[in-house]
Length: 425
Image 1 (tube, rainbow, N blue to C red):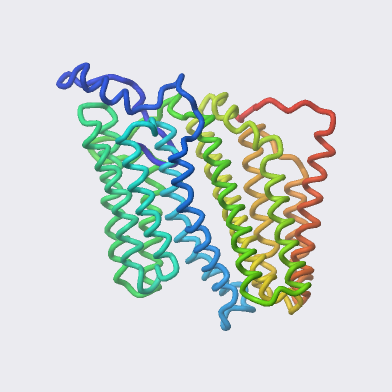
Image 2: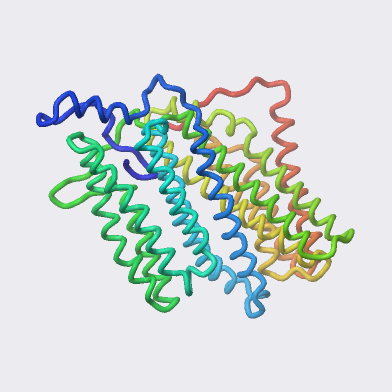
């Protein structure tokens, strides 16, 4: 299976001496063939439905971070509480990306692979349900579900690909997930501060294991395969995740409007929120967003480029979710006084998105165009002077900056053919 961040040298159909050709054929049938269609399947789109709900719960927690009475005007305290929410998001993100990379490596039309996807989907639903109280009463549900997904998935592949080189990869991963299970489960019974520390350690173990190739003393580590990424498939999975995140902003904004009187200023706030969503979509898919698959395929090191693409999308998704939380704050009190923490969400979300989009552009073209870092600097410079202004005005300022980036992209591309992918070496 490998990690969400990298795939390892498990691509050959080489059998062990004990199992011979039967094992080779059985496991080869599970693998995605290089010549097979690379488009995501309906099962994978179905799987994403759970993450619409999960991201909605994450945004709900972000809004609570910003609206609790004792932190509403304290940026540093809000950031600390945002960090707790980010911890939960990173766990959910790790599940999604591992599944995306798994179906990029294994054939999702095979019943065994479909079984893994569906059981992971159910576990992800439980994770999403547990997000709201994960640092309190539902902590055990969150931790035990996460551990069950990671350990169970690795163990399943250890059994199903026995006799093949793939088995060793999953055995190594299983050891690491078994180690991280200890702080995950121990944290579920600990007080909040201790729980945060233990879960941070557990998540660090999981991410570090994937980055290093699951090294185990005496057993070595998994080696990266030079062609183990289905670039077109992986690119479309990331596109779909961005659409899911953007769809969450529309769902949250519409629901927020319905929770209060539908008056002119709140309707205008919904309009501004919608414009931010449209501009984020436009900036994401401009040029680099259209050729990610080509860039990964053309790279001399697709695994490394895939990791960079994953990181860029993490930044962008976090930025979209922060923007969604900011939009809900605007709908709560569009003409009030914008608190420091609120300004941080309303302007920080687009800034973080642009940072991720800059990394994404580097993945495709080995460069970063100036409008994106300029947009980040403008948003950062505006933040201090926006404190105390109406939240609706702060959101409108974010629209102006994003519109400037989108227009700059359009002007620069006018009359020019679509660039070819030129990933970094």
